[in-house]
Amino acid sequence: MADKYLNLVNSGWGKTTAKKLGLPKPAHLRRYRPGAPLVPGPVLVLGKTAAADGVAATLLGWDLDVRRHADPRGKYGAVILVLDEVAHPDDLAAPVLEAATAMKRLLPGGRAVTISRPAESDNDPATAAARQGVDGLLRSIAHELRGGATGNGILLEGGADAASPSVAGTLRFLLSGRSAYVDGQFLRVGGNDGAIPADWDKPLTGKVAVVTGAARGIGASIAGTLHRDGADVVVVDIPHAGEALAEVANGFHGTALQLDITADDAGDRILDHAMSRYGRLDIMVHNAGITRDKLLANMDESRWKSVLEVNIAAQLRINEQLLKSGKFAESPRIVSLASTSGIAGNRGQTNYATSKAGVIGMVRATAGRMPEGGTINAVAPGFIETEMTARMPFATREVARRLNSLQQGGRASDVAETISFLASDAAGGISGQVLRVCGQNLVGA
Ligand code: NAD
Image (cartoon, rainbow, N blue to C red):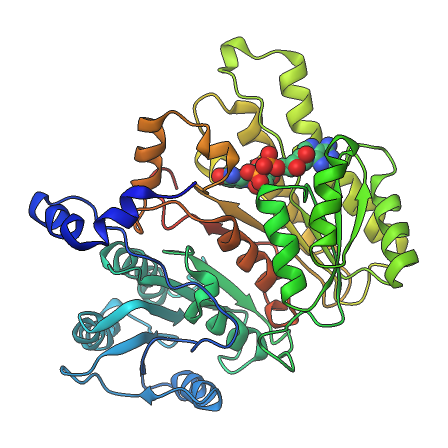
């Protein structure tokens, strides 16, 4: 559904009126287009460590205009703050204050990215304080940015090298328009796993992907995006949605599998279909999901059980069948749809929030059981413009749309871009995590 307010405040008199009245002024977000520049201007890399040098070298390798000192008159497409060696909160002052000068000069759709290490309980307390400090710093920067600019952080886990393929891949995702609606988030990038794709615009070439619930909405967008990025795609949905499903598949010469994912043998049937049509399966996207909202006081068995069955029990069964088969084994990827309701809870959604929190628990516990090179992650969308949210009452919808740092709802394509990134070889160092695609929603965690 079109966001008429966003269009209004970005046009002639609407712009002036919004400014005069102090109304929110959401910006048109910079979204990915194959072949478009990665960032809208020069990239400033701040930090004096070997990691900062490594990051600058990576960016130069991508032919970006890289600067190492903030020029008060410069304009920047991105500011990268490398803080991997901070050992005391005092160490933050100099780089952060240098970054402050540049933040004022960030171009519309720009990016602020921190690269640091996670605070662990066995760190020296001053080191842990400095590292955890970056968390508050980055999330506050993200709240302060305007003009569709976003701020996100990379946490180098377990000695990960800043020049590793996975760190490079994550940085590229965060700088690009693919992460337009990802804001105020941290991604832990571990080890030195992952691989740089031969073509950054076709990172899924040669892969076979399955997307459930793909007859419409976010699922259809995920399927189209995985195909655009080079994958062969199998779309799955209930037989009742067969016609719409066939249309989605025909849109990109994919194949359709009519299947209720709650069937006992759903995992085996998905695998049989992928093997017989394409001879392999690399990417499993669990997108199918349902809501049956009611206050807990009015909850009945059917509402509770159906939501838990579709949103989590079916995924557990499918994963078990895929992993047991031995055929889903060459650096496989599983990406599952959670929700911000599963993180913060939501009134009237005890069943849904339980199922989506369950997805997060499943993902964390399955990470260590994936075959070598394999990863599993969850994506938690916030307010996304879909048929579901178009049906919300006007006032509730308007409030929900504006209550995030980007002051607008996300698009199905924003969720799809994030899933495509997590499904790629370049995200090989990211596993067991939840990435929110919510524009830094102000409600909840
Ligand atoms: P949607 O209702 O538009 O589409 C869901 C699809 O799943 C439908 O095509 C439906 O037929 C299919 N499906 C349902 N049960 C199935 C089953 N048993 N077997 C196979 N297919 C089945 O939903 P959407 O808004 O596109 O959401 C997609 C996912 O994103 C869901 O998991 C949802 O919980 C999650 N999500 C959505 C939002 C949002 O704002 N729309 C926010 C957070 C999370």
